[in-house]
Picture 1: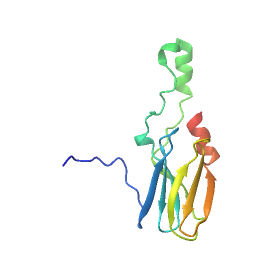
Picture 2: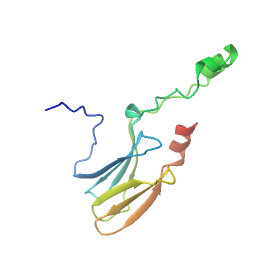
Picture 3: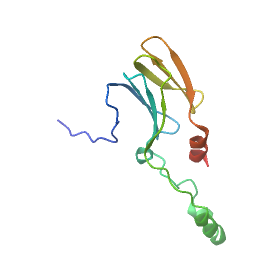
Picture 4: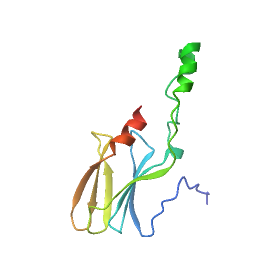
Length: 128
């Protein structure tokens, strides 16, 4: 049998029913669990777009290079961004919107559908 490498650990003390990553920004991960919570995590360590690789160094002049280094912002670390507790029963499904990469939904055993957005501060930190 082939060894499988664990990319990250979900720290929840109850059963996790669903894990979904965002197809546009794959560091964003949703986990739905039987404790009626939905957790949004920012897992930058598994992202396919490494931090700081959006600007091609060959396109910068010498003056722009120095300015670019001064502007450096602190990279995010793997973390739980938000815990959503709007459900009253086990959350069995979580899905990202195919139309809006910042929108996601969760469905619980009691039939409640909850729609949420990625927090604005995180959205702009990812984009800018």
